[in-house]
Image (cartoon, rainbow, N blue to C red; front, side, top):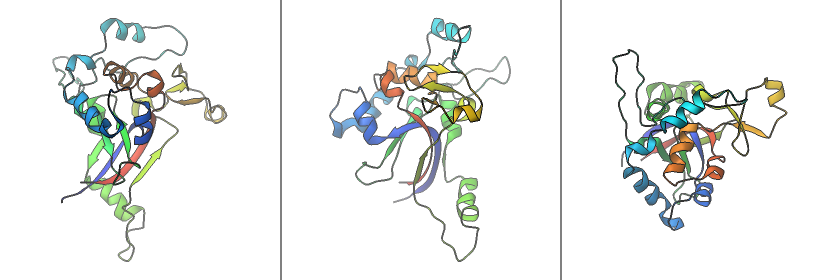
Length: 224
């Protein structure tokens, strides 16, 4: 059986917590299969934010307002020139399971805001990742075995364009503040990208309460 060294960042939660939070109509033992089927059969239009909703969020003058960064979560490219066209990725690119246990009890689920970031944030056998593992963490000595064990860490700040985005535990967006003030505010957490909230609710995978439990993570593991 072939294997690959996988690394990713995104927003996720432990698999057991996801099974407890999901709104999918399925038995607990069939959650993964139902999730796969939901994405595989999803109509691409589900991932397009309604124009009025997108515009209202973008031009809002309310305090602490948040905007969508893309009008369509399946866009897998950015337009560098006016004549460029957007290309749609696949719905199945927007999530994956991080396999760290045989019975799934220690696994995690990770979601991505759009296909563009999914492709940037999801890597397999990347030469830089492997070099950091073999030559950085343990010093690169011939006599030291690198630690290739799975690691999943939930972090206190978001990723990419969302690194300074905050929300309350109830999901209400909040403006960024200085680090010393933020360290004294356990009631504020990294904001879940609005694009992710849109399609997870549209597909009936998570409700607002479930989405609010997602946290940014970094992970590495051996995939088979």
